Image (cartoon, rainbow, N blue to C red; front, top):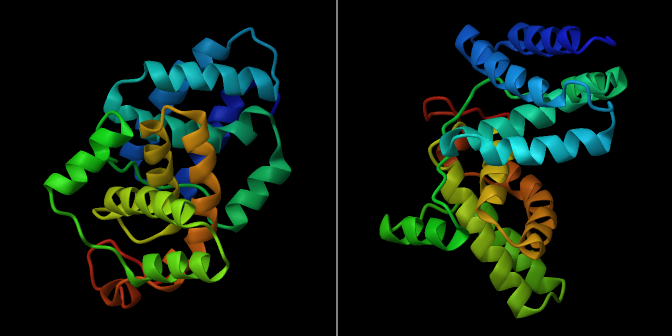
Length: 219
């Protein structure tokens, strides 16, 4: 898979085989062709890819940025021809098969403002359980408060979307795009990794039985 065109086709064929709709496949094809145009002629290294993707995502239209970030992350191992990583990600259902419209409000403060104006309070039992565990483990009150604010914003972004792990990853991507300060991003990443098994294990009752349209009891 030395040729990047072959890498692109391999990625698109894989998500199509896993169940992605043709519209999803074609939208990602168009996006990744734009990325590959920027990568053309550059060294095929991790550093090159990360640097180009960072600028590429920032240059995308606002409502396309979450999809761009998620899609570029998934395509990364194909571009590097790392088939071992492809198999690993496939085995844990790590490829997203739909293109959700994740809300982008601008800055994190603007996102919180939108959440408050909509009076959003739909926080699942998992949030209280996770924050309670942090308290039991002796984390400072300020750390618990900061993580609580970040995770409430994540749950706000997640709320309209199917209850599954790919929605979670893409909502995390969306939240990262609201955080301008690298220190805030470093605070978020361990929080979302630690919270994920709580979110997955202790959802709302309707999500456990999969009664909402598009939700799954087994994310």
